[in-house]
Image (cartoon, rainbow, N blue to C red; front, side, top):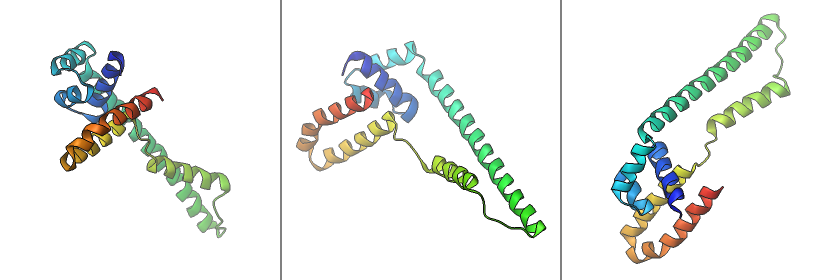
Length: 150
């Protein structure tokens, strides 16, 4: 892993997973001082706050759109009941609802989430078999590098 990749990975772990600087340093193979310097130079705290604010705002907007769509469908159904002409939703409406539901359920495994999961796995393996954990490190590093390249 290059120094640039380590720095990008470190920031991603800090911003997206709220890893401590000590844990990031251990994972990236650099000193805590290096992590602290990178964090200060790139203003990781502000990036984390901005990211959280944007994500929260986006989620709220999406939930409002979903709520609006559901209200429209419910109103249409109520109007049909009142007119005595209840009918099925059309294919477009059903597709729209399906996509909204899929959007809610779908969760792409981000790079930092992958690293967090692998870190937890490695900590578990280390408690069970330290030798095996050491043997797995090059494979985990290679896998993480491949993820980062995507």
